Amino acid sequence: MTPQAGPPLLTRSTISELLARYRHLPRKTLGQNFVADPNTIRRIVTLAGVTEESSVVEIGPGLGSLTLGLAMTAGRVVAVEADPSLLEPLTEVTAGTGVEVIGADALSLDWAETLSGAAVASATTPKVTEWDLVANLPYSVATSLLLGVAERAPMITRGLVMVQREVGERWQAEPGSRTYGIPTVMLARWGTASIVGEVPRSVFLPEPRVDSVLVRFIRHERSPIPTDGVDDERLDRVVRTAFGGRRKMLRRSLSGIVSLEHFEVAGVNPTDRPEQLALADFSRLAAQLPAGR
Image (cartoon, rainbow, N blue to C red; front, side, top):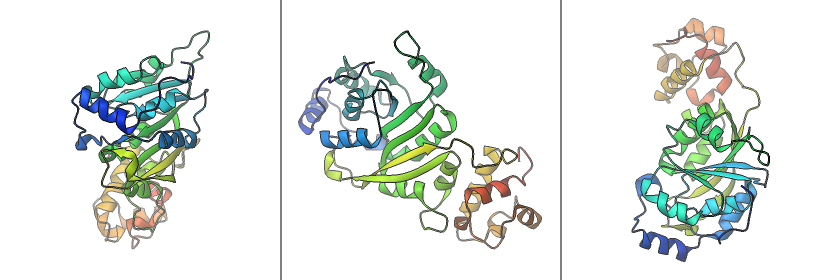
């Protein structure tokens, strides 16, 4: 796919026309608030650092507002849409742009198979080894989607995603803050997240009832957990159990799985509360659990 001028970006009037013609009522449960402002689309593409060398995955393209902006700049674009009723208008909007539209739920997608199929090498298009994620993620499942990509799609090395403000604040939170929690720790296992911009409600159709932010995600080149550390299953259990008793001291919230001796070996104060611990602290605690426990 060669970057090209392509069709004009979608506006409020063109989105309204598409919705009416396809008799599609935006589904709140799927977070279908479509970006109806071309300037916002250009801003997202610029902040994402997309170039003609970029291979981009978009989750939840909807009617193709952001997809068109990406197609004008990126070398390759794969758009993954879970709502079957949007596949026909999305295919119409992106016709002739070279975008590959895939009808699938990104939460259960086999990323290795999907992106290897989209990245078939040829004499003019070398095999893609790294992908960017650029998307207006469905807000209700944004954390699950990004964690799924982080865990199961190592070929996606960075991203810029739009999410609800509260979600973005949780992702970038520091230990000790009120927004620090399970998503913060589990995402830190794979990379760093930082808010790099705000998006006003007025650019969406329909307008959401929440504020939105743009979050940059960069995958770690090396795992922050030592090679002799802990598997994800044990880490997940310790983190979720600890935050299940957020106001409790760790010796109480983790009493069923971590002994006082384990706290001492891990170098973690049992009187601390979960929001005081960093990823490395949780990983040392989790390493004390027998494998498979």
